[in-house]
Image 1 (tube, one colour):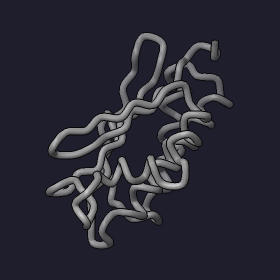
Image 2 (cartoon, one colour):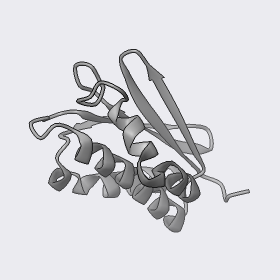
Image 3 (cartoon, helix red, strand yellow):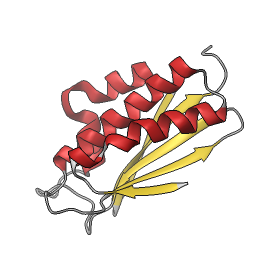
Image 4 (cartoon, helix red, strand yellow):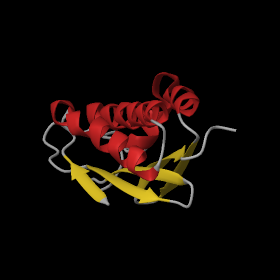
Length: 132
């Protein structure tokens, strides 16, 4: 399932609930689904805070189900998919700012980043089965 939302922090409320429901639907225990939803919400909020104020549909969430996991890809789509200074993508900035990468990794089962010349994305992973 794909969801595209405006990059405005006040409009991000449904992200946590949608993610928790997706994880629960996949079979994650409620506590694990809650931590996963919080991690996704933190990343999306961090990206939104870095996006231009007039951006109306910059953040894309793609929910996928694996055999024993639920995955959420968070991507920022802007014409050049980079920050105003043109150095790094907003998703990458959100991950590296204030130790967010390590903080998010502690809350979830996996985190993968991807980037190319057109943009960056981050995949957050929640294992359905108990943590090993």
